[in-house]
Amino acid sequence: MTDHIPHIVIIGGGFGGLYAAKQLKRVKARVTLVDKRNFHLFQPLLYQVATGGLSPGDIASPIRAVLKKYPHVSVLKDEVRGIEPDEKRLILKGGELSYDYLIVATGVRHHYFGNSHWGSHAPGLKTIEDALEMRRRILNAFEEAEKLDDPDLRAELKRFVIVGAGPTGVELAGALAELAHATMHRNFRNIDPSRVDIVLVEGTDRVLPPYPPDLSAKAQNALEKLGVKIMTKTFVTDIQDRNVRLKRADGSEETLRAATVLWAAGVKANRFGEALAAKTGAEADRSGRIAVQPDLSLPGYDHILVVGDLAQIIQPNGKQVPGVAPAAMQMGRYAASRVRDMIAGRPSKPFTYFDKGSLAVIGRNAAVADLNVLKLSGLPAWLIWAFIHIHFLIEFGNKMIVSTQWAWNYLTRKRGARLITGKFTPEEDGG
Image (cartoon, rainbow, N blue to C red; front, side, top):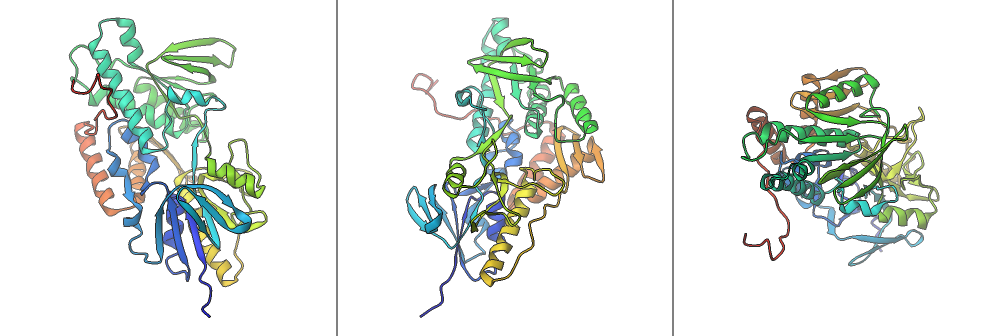
C-alpha cells in the first residue's frame, strides 16, 4: 500500500496564488492551480493599457509558461463555483475537485456600494476586459467630438470623470491627462485634445488618503499642473447616461454632464469569497474580506488558507494589511511554507507583513513614494516606481518589452496601443 500523496489546490493565478505555487516547488505533494483565465495579469499596470500606453500582452503571462519548470504543479483552466469545506471538495464549472490543503487567492471585484447598475455607465479596472473597455470609451470620446459642431456636446465628450482618488484613480487621471495633452497633440483637425476637462472625485479630504499628508499634497499639485480638477469631500450619489450627480460635504449638490465616467472607488469580495465565508462561518467585513487567523487559516479549518486582497489581516499596530501586490506575494509565499509545515507536522510562526512602502505615479517624471524611512516625490520617485514595476513583471520577455516601450514613450511622448476594439453593430460594420 502506497502512502497518500497530499493534494494542494490553489484557487487563483494572481500574485498570491502564483507566488504560492512557485514556493511549493520542493514539496512532496501534488499541486493544482485553478483559474478561469489562462494568464497571470500584472494588475498595477492595467491603467497603462486603459490609456493606450501598453498592450494587454505586455502585462500578462500564460500561467502554464510561468510554471513550466514545476512538473508537479498542474494548471486547470476552470471556474470554481462552490465549496464543501467539511468534505474538502470544490465545485467547478466543469466538475469537482478534492483537496487536502486549499489556498484561496481569488482576489476582489468592483464595489459600487449597493449601486451595481452604475457598472454599465462607469467601468472599473480589474481585468484586461475592463482596461480595453476603458480604452475604447476614452478614445471614442475624442473621435465622436471630432465629428460634432455643437459646443455643448463636444464639452460632454471631452469631460472625463474619475471616481476615487486612491492610487488607481490618481494614476488614471495622470495618464489620461498626458494622453490628451501630449500624445494626441496635432492628431485631430477640428478639436484640440488638450482642452479636456478631467475631474477626479474623492470622498475624503485629500487624494491618496493612505499616504502621508505631505505626499498627498504633492500628488495633488502634480495633478493640477496637468490640468486635472480635483473635488475632495465630494460623493457620487447617482450615475446615469452622461450624468454624474455629486454631493459635497457642505450639502451642496451638482450634476456633471460627462460622456466618460471611470470607477476607481472601491472593491469587494468576489462570489467565491462570499460562498467560502457562508460555508465556513468565517467573519467578513463590509467589503466581504474574510477575517483570517494569524497563520492565514480560517477558524475551524486550518487546512484552508486565504491570501491576497480577499484576506482581512489586522497587524499589531492596528492597521489592516493593504490590498497591494507586495502583500499578496508575501502571503502567497507564507501560505506555501505553512502548508509545507502542516504536511511535515511542524509548527509555524504567524504571518508577518513587511511593509516596503507605497508608490503612485502621476505622470512624466512625477510620482510619490512613501518608503517608510524615506519620502520622495518627482523624478526620483518615478524612477523607483518604474524599476520596481518592471522588476516584478513575471517573465523576462515582458520586462524587456515594457522597459523598451516605456523608454520609447518617454522620449517621444507616444502611446502606440491606441486601438479602439470591441464588437461592432451591423450598421457600424464595414464603415
